[in-house]
Image (tube, rainbow, N blue to C red; front, side, top):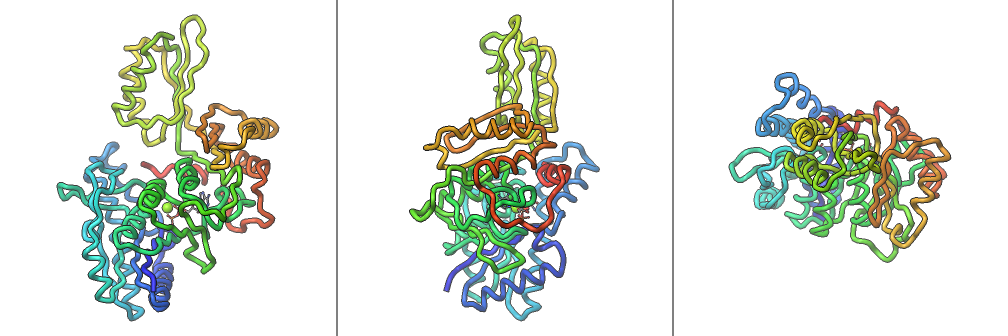
Length: 426
Ligand code: ADP
Ligand code: ASP
Ligand code: MG
């Protein structure tokens, strides 16, 4: 008998029919002799709709109210799922983040979990219930509701799995595992049987939305095995765990893309010491997460500095620059929203020179212009025009020998749909 956490994302609980299917799956896992805890996201696009409602009333909604509002999405799906399980003759009980013992710090919209109190869930399990936990939410020291950042139900699932000592944390979604690239834009992407925490962390951090990065971080820290699999079929998915000897070390494990960032260029910056420090300290002070930084060669004592940051941070970045630019006597700043970041990821890169050269020549041969570059020992990222993102992922995927013989049959996304999927509002 195993103890399993099963997390279902928004697509998997988007309608009453789908919730029934989820209930059926949970009951099946229980009938197999397992103890099961469910974690759910809000139904379909509920969270986006709630963000839209708030925006219609206030362009800068108070963070506390926003978290309270967004937490209601998961509270709807958790109760409906519990009802659907009961309708199949099994006992179920829903729990909000607070009731499930998810204690966080007070950083609204991206709260960090500080403690997991497992008592209520353990008690419900002992009494034969299937506990159904609302993902994405917790409670801070003041008793206020917090949320864990977009996609945060994955993190709830891993935290609950750790808190109750589960054998595995199964994350069900609309794809049957982690692929070498997003199969919706790269039909030749291959499903991976297993992937190390390190590679998955880098892929998630570079935009692979199949698992929230914080969930992978948590899993790595506390050694929770994740099984990413399909909500619609029974096929084995991808195991995310500490590296094993059996894993072949490919040079590139996967390619991620991210269209949620923007590029800001500050023009006519006096090329003197201390200027960059002033700009980036001010940005950091205003909670702008700067990703890449590019400084051009200076001409006549003036230079341009560009940086990328999440689209959600742009408003704060603009406020900061309007304040700082007169101070450093820079001319102006311009914003480019139509960018995408494409990243090659693989622990095998450490021991393989030539990855950058091959990536650049592949992009060049396909007339894809590189706007910025950044590297880490196991990642190479380039910023390009967002209209070329699918093409870039596909040509790099082929060039690095990742293409599968079969083709992913489900819907492929257009450039607009790719952007919409990533720009989740906040
Ligand atoms: P959920 O709503 O269930 O949390 P998500 O939409 O967050 O599901 O994650 C699943 C989506 O992740 C897929 O539909 C797919 O388009 C996207 N995705 C991005 N990168 C990858 C990848 N490397 N492998 C699989 N899916 C990926
Ligand atoms: N409902 C939240 C979101 O849409 C959390 C999640 O789905 O994981 O981001
Ligand atoms: Mg998700």
